[in-house]
Length: 201
Image 1 (cartoon, helix red, strand yellow):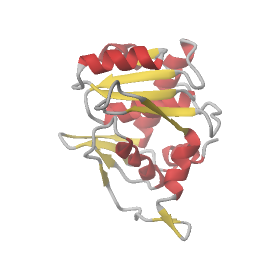
Image 2 (tube, helix red, strand yellow):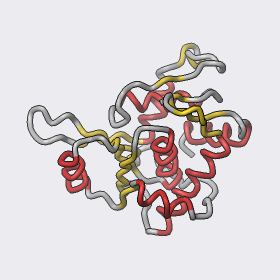
Image 3 (tube, rainbow, N blue to C red):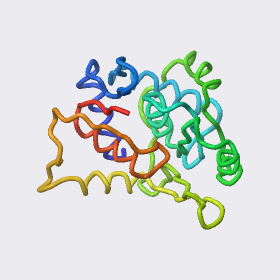
Image 4 (cartoon, rainbow, N blue to C red):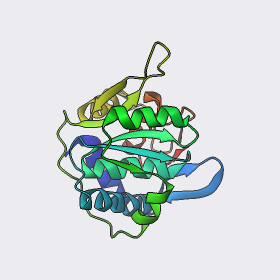
């Protein structure tokens, strides 16, 4: 299994009641148990639709913990996500949908279907060179271009945030993400899963 996903699974088992995700505009957190359940439902929903390794899944939801839960669900499935906060320009989203050959989209409509699914346990066996997520450039010099990031790149990014083999953060640290969730910088939230403390969006 990919190292950061293995650690995430460990945290879901070891710290089921600890907050995993929060939202600055809402007092309610999502615990590791809830994150496991929600992402497992996404895994089931995608699997039943024949979505799998390196298939692209577009996530278009309002900013908040649910986007991150959907991302984890996509990764449980072994597929790749493209995150679009719902306030993004519709023209840009239409372009991304067409350019990325998206196999499925998760919007608020699909969330209702997903909520009725039975969670699928475990993670698909992703390869370090499989596509994990795609980030689109601003398009300031032409059409936006999709940049593919592999699962192994995420592990490497996390390792680069360590000193002498230890994370730079403490277990009591809480991560705040201010960047748009479709930016590479927002994916820094992954380093949080090496520590059982919440990420605040």
